[in-house]
Amino acid sequence: YAIKNHKQSVGNNNESSILSIFKQAISDGIKSKECYALANGIGQMLLDEAAKEQKRLSTGA
Image (cartoon, rainbow, N blue to C red):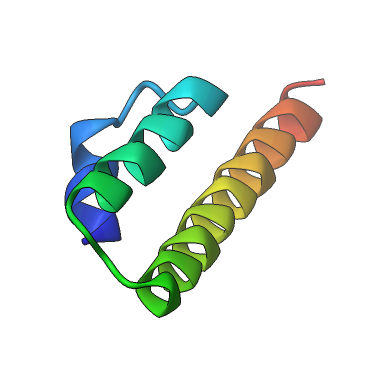
């Protein structure tokens, strides 16, 4: 579920797209456990992106 929504929002890795994923998940009627899993998945993706960006910036400097 998170991967499907992540692919839809690639390039829009900002807060509003993340919130829209949660809104979509809630409207799809997912359970709270799944919502926590989704939050963890999104958090991990953001951490990965931040790590990549930090590497890119540190090697470019």
